[in-house]
Length: 98
Image (cartoon, rainbow, N blue to C red; front, side, top):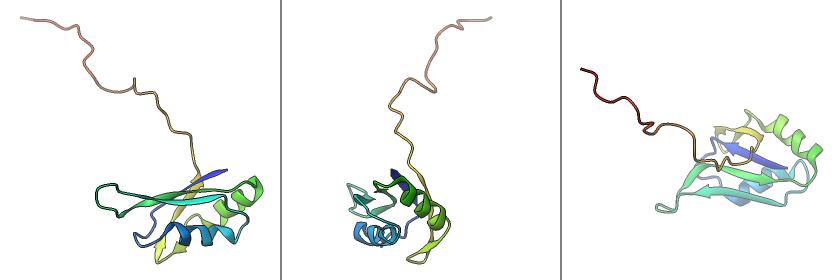
């Protein structure tokens, strides 16, 4: 299961994130997302755990817990929505109303 972790301390590393989740079971990967331009953490990351029961235990126990001095948010990651058709834009019509 892919797990989303938000509100991370900017000093939390991918390895530190892995260590927190390994207390609940096997971790396939743990990645803190970094800003490409600054090289600084964006304050969120993803953890992949192969066992769904272990993943749910981690989510339930770690959500709103403190890691590196920050209260984190932990939930099941939702697939990215790559549909870029939504929202805004000019729809035409109208015309002059005098």
